[in-house]
Each structure stands twice: as C-alpha cells, then as structure tokens.
Image 1 (cartoon, helix red, strand yellow):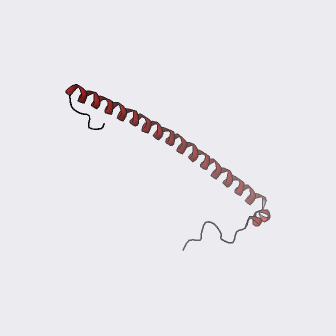
Image 2 (cartoon, helix red, strand yellow):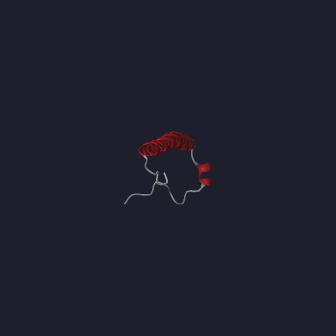
Image 3 (cartoon, one colour):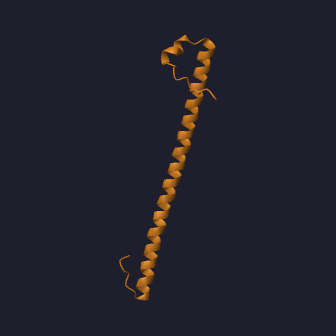
Length: 83
C-alpha cells in the first residue's frame, strides 16, 4: 500500500524546522507548481477566447442564413412563418 503524497500531520509550522535543502526543495516545488498553474490558466484563457470567437462567428452565420432563407421565401411568395 502506498503512502499518501501529503502527510496529513504536516503543518505550516513544520516548514520552519526544515533544513536548508528541504526548504530549497519546497521553494522549487512551489515555484514549479505556480508556473504550471499560470501556464494552464493562460492556455485555458486562450481556448476560452477561441471558443467565444467561434460561437460569435456561428451566431453571425446563423443570422445570415435566416436572412437568406427569409429573402428566398419572399422571392418565392411564401409566408415566412415567423422567421
């Protein structure tokens, strides 16, 4: 059975009792995680903007399609039926 990655008895006060090497490792890990989270946030932001742009484009296309259908129906002399 594996030990949990995080010791449930670990307290923030224990950081003060760590050796210099342990403290450096904690700082390195903290920096790594922070950088990773920032990169993930940037990627999610870029994807969100891309998705919203595509949704806007799709809305414009749907509006154009509805207008074209209404124009064709008018030319054909058919009632638009609430389009």
